[in-house]
Amino acid sequence: MKSSPHRHTPAIISLTAIQNNVKKMRQHINKKAELWAVVKANAYGHGAVPVARSVHELVDGFCVSNLDEAIELRHHLITKPILVLSGIVPDNADIAASLNITLTAPSLDWLKLIVAQEKNLTGLSNLKIHIAVDSGMGRIGVRDAAEANAMIELADAHSIVFDGIFTHFATADEADNHKFDAQKTKFDEMVKSLLRRPKYVHSTNSAAGLWHSEQVQDIERLGIAMYGLNPSGETLELPYELEPAFSLKSELTHVKMIEVGDTVGYGATFRATEETWVGTVSIGYADGWTRDMQGFHVLVDGKFCEIIGRVSMDQMCIKLEKAYPLGTPVTLIGREGEHEITTQDIADWRHTINYEVLCLLSDRIYREYK
Image (spheres, rainbow, N blue to C red):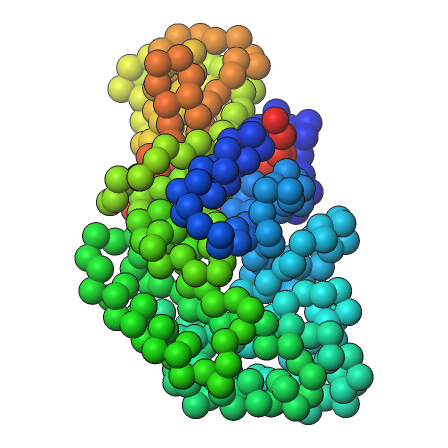
């Protein structure tokens, strides 16, 4: 989707906030573990390349979700190690090897498909893998040490570098630790049963790093906390203050007064009961500002203004307390005056998580960096 800088609906990204959040996590874990920045999904909507460049000297590596995200970083001269966290199509392992991109090995069957490809036989000596362990997340990964050890032997036989092993906690952001402790025990036991320990053993994401810092091993995978958001939403109190890096602005493109009985939007779901000033804002569900935002609010002139009528594909309407000039600023995420709208506020309204709010905001929203 084409970014639209002339539309006057920018996301403002504070790279300083992101850098500060990285430094704070480094101090919090207080050990020699490496810190790898998770910049998957376009850095959770913040912009993978600008974010990676801004923290390049503060972190030891990067994590992405797929091979194309890793290739993008390499093409923009990101030289630190990169780990693809999901399993990729085996046919493309040679591309990863040629660019020094580390792959997640989700199963023995996956690894067999790679070594069975004739085109890879000469290029696999440069390939690094981290074996994924399913300790209870239920997505990808081996479930017993026998399969992990068979993968190590197969990798050795084809000069593939067994560089790491990792797992992912399903409930590190919850108050109840029973599931977390069970996963930790299973993962630790599997590591002890390996033919040998790799360079990297890791399990902690943002939530685990924040609330279970004693579990940080060789790598802390820093994701949502790097962008200044609480991984638990509002369930757990943060051990230190995070700095939100994302704000979203727009402006009034049209202002009018409607009469009693006039309706706004598709389905005529809003009907005026009095004379009402209405402002139009250039953002809609094609931008990831979803239709269920009707009834929520934005900030104009430091005051909350209700979103009225259904959100359209490209525009929405808000209720104003008075007439404002065209071009008057509108804050959708961020602070204006004494009030603030947070990503978590939007997540609560939508009955979802703050991650999803940011990741849904499309590339059509122009990103500006500070």
